[in-house]
Image (cartoon, rainbow, N blue to C red; front, side, top):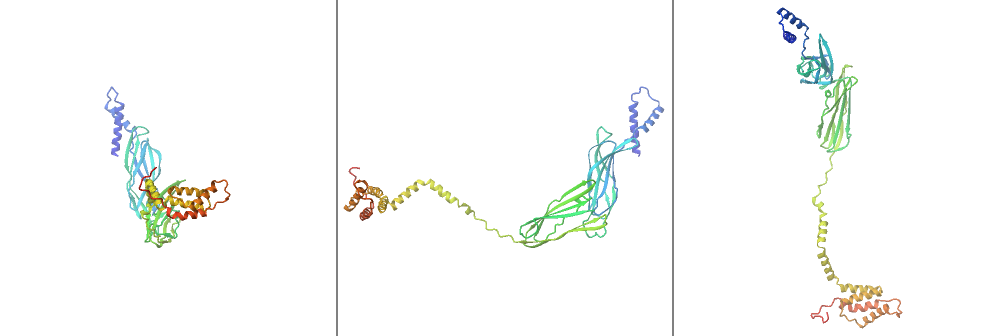
Length: 431
């Protein structure tokens, strides 16, 4: 109070100096004191900003939403957004809700601007609980315009009472709500599986007048041979027509590591209904499924089997590169195994066997080219003349030529003349 009076006197004195700084005549001390006294009472008081906590109720059930408010006051408009340092309370947490409600009020001649921020306390404790001072940081002006001033203020501590519902002492985690719905889905549905299969279980909770953070986490108990993986829960809070609803969605992944029959235990959720003053619960049934051993994978194929295509590729490349030497070699090999004179004799006899006069003529000419020094016998010469007469003599009366006799005469001399004659060591006279 003394500090506030000193501030008012200082303000009045400043106004006094401002008003009478331009006076050329000095005032008498009595007049001066009278005017200072008048200014002291007509000067408006400059109010300091403040932050205070308000608790509409100071009692709640375990896990129930306990609302409270923090009101910020300043003698000028607010600038920017306010921030709060929320304390850590064992087995409890504080959640800020919504956006602040702006307002104003007048006390005497001073107008105050206000911000009303809503918070919610959720606690699993039991008995008396203290909310430590909460630090609020905000900025404001003096009036509607002008520079902005920063303020950092602390609220007074507050005490609340958290009451454990009767009969819930051994239930552990408990929430308080009028309505709680719990659903679960499986992907894939539990059934016969193989070792190494993966099951995903999604559990969704929805509660009225609760945030999803305050709902019970899903247990992760599983028998031996099942490995459990959990992810971060998805929390969604909705406010519709003044009704607050929280949702918590969790996905649990089960990896089957061993064959056999496995049973996932039942999951029981408990909550206290403050309207009916009763404990309620819902149980997700146990799930049993059988896992068989995974089939033994075939041995890994040898990398050599994937190189089979190299053999034909190499053969084709080598064949293309060596095509001329190979062709010459095959030609020479054929000449050794089946020489041209023998092929010519075989073609001549085939034509005679089929009574082909023209073919026999060509075959004889080819064979004779390989045996230029050959002198046919009288019988062979006779049958060759018959062949020529049949082909070239218009007066020939033979309608069809028969080559059996010519073939027989040729065979008698062919055995000794099938090979070409060896070259003479003497040079030819007329090459």
